[in-house]
Length: 254
Image (tube, rainbow, N blue to C red):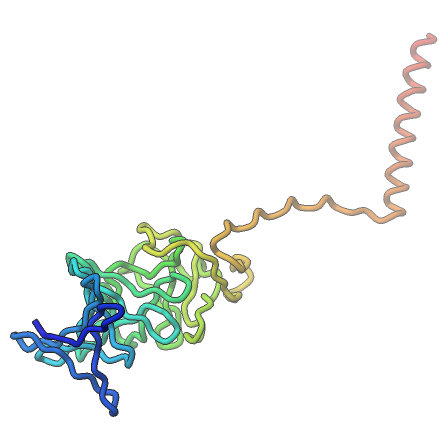
């Protein structure tokens, strides 16, 4: 295994970063670059954002001491993909289970997707649509339009979209729907915001925070009557009541 210098205080292995910001990578006997390890045995990514590569030049994920993938974070502290020449759009954890990266709010997202992906939907979306941290389906944007496919589950229609998902630095290109996912998010629940989405008059009202349940619509107000009409109705009622009393007492005296 490759050897790195060790920090005397933390006992973590440390990277040697040159003036040109390149790293003096440790390399194993198969020619794979290897990440430095912390004292607990977990690998970690260097601060300059560089990734270790295998002999073919493909970037590799750092792993914990028990071989679990460690997802790198971007400058905004979002999960990010490692992309090689194959333009992979998903990350694979233990047992080759596909995972989507998470944004700063714990909502899943995808990278830019090619325009022509017909017939390749399950390759770009192996787990179906991405979802929010509270398990609502997210519709991603492809070429400036909402991407909805009958090849993905659960089934979603344009009328299910209720708002644009707030993502810092991502141009708010993804949409939130009122369709519940058939799988659960791996992220913790936390608040996030969405912006209004206009799709005709039948579009559901936008919600500010999807963590809370949709507000219950208030009861419809009773119809209001004008003042003259109110007096007219009262007069009719009084006349009817007087007539009823007259009939009652008149018949009683006969």
